[in-house]
Length: 285
Image (cartoon, rainbow, N blue to C red; front, side, top):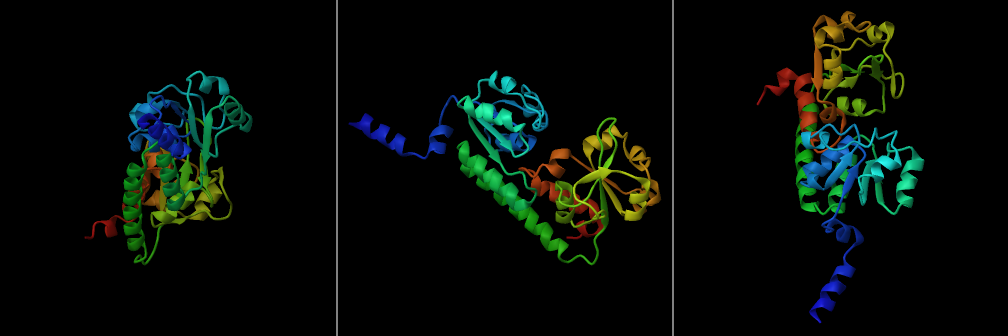
């Protein structure tokens, strides 16, 4: 009788809860932010592989890679024998995602919109899916607290610096961010204004456009900063040295996933950016 009762209770659990309790759960994450969320929730040991954008924590970086999130192959993912695939809307190509579903795998693709609320929603949803709801709530509360504190400080600012976000990797041409990008949203959250608002997305950097933008600060992810060889490399980019940022040597480099990931370290990223953009106000108690 007791066995029947236990079985009945088990069958009545929500599907996601039953799945999360599976001791054989094997997860493949298809995005660096998703990987970081799973590890931050204390479930990193369940991850058997991830994509090449999964740079943090070190344990995630050391796992087998299944390719870049936008150029995946079903074979590489299936070889890891996962039973849960988690990714953001960038994951693809679409036919690969359909192949994974056709193979009987549970594939969940979350929205990739930048912003505090979308980030909180993804953390809560992933936490619920993998049986880490309480841990997700803690992370969400921390992000809310930090972002609200910075928002309060921003509301008292008399002026905001113009920020030029530069993306550079390896030998590729440097690009700058217009509107409707994760960089654009982080600049706003950190108490700055985007120096480039004439287009959406990213465009290659040109001397004329950079000088016309007259940025007070150059913002760049750490990996790009390092690939350029530091400050000297940043100021050697077309037009940068002839801007207020170049003349005052103002460059802010922040870890790629902290700055653009909109994951569990979002609150820390907002704080770091605000303090870098407003060093005088951040020193005040």
